[in-house]
Amino acid sequence: MTAPDTQSVSEIGLLLNRAMEQNANIETLERVIKLYEQGQHILAKQQFHHAFAAFQSEMPKVRRSKQANFPTRNGSTMSYSYASLDDVVEAVKPVLHKFGLSYWFEQQQEGPSISVTCTVSHVSGHSINNVVTGPIDTSGNKNGIQQVSSTITYLKRIALVGILGVACTDEDLDGYSPDIPQQKASAYPEDDFQRNLPDWTTRIESGRNSADEILTSINSKAPATPEQVQRLQSIQYKG
Image (cartoon, rainbow, N blue to C red; front, side, top):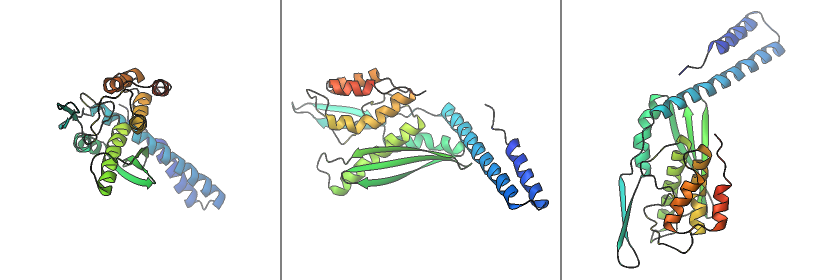
């Protein structure tokens, strides 16, 4: 993998020094400074993409280490495994740091919805963002603070997985949270569809999953409605 060329930016820096030594007028200095800043911005972006490609070439798969069990209405017990936020962080953090990459989260609540922004940044200064929004999780017997905490943790996970393109072993494509057990229904719940749609959109647009693969996962829980099928199939792979 070829590293970004820094020579052109260095040459602009030398040009700036020469202009200052020759007491160039303000207009000339401003043009040279603007050119230098543009070169720095382009170089930072190139260095980010170089580091991100290197990270993805060594990115480990995340194993789903957590297990959830819950009783069904007929008295039997169902269980499934899932990858928690801690599982994802433990797997990707060492590789991110190896290539000068880091991440952080910001969150904002507006009425019944919470938005989480995941930012991935390189030491060069360039960064990218992924914003995921969802309704507050009111399931179970959680109090208000626990509802918000559960929602933020879930949104952080799908925001980080989405921006990094992480693959989980035996991924649960519907993103069901371990504290939100679901029963087989006559149609896939629209609230759950809207909650998972940002993650599904990221998966389809990045090419990690096709709409048909996600629909197969949905239909294993409950039949997708015609409108839900149409919305998923309208999402295009962006390459």
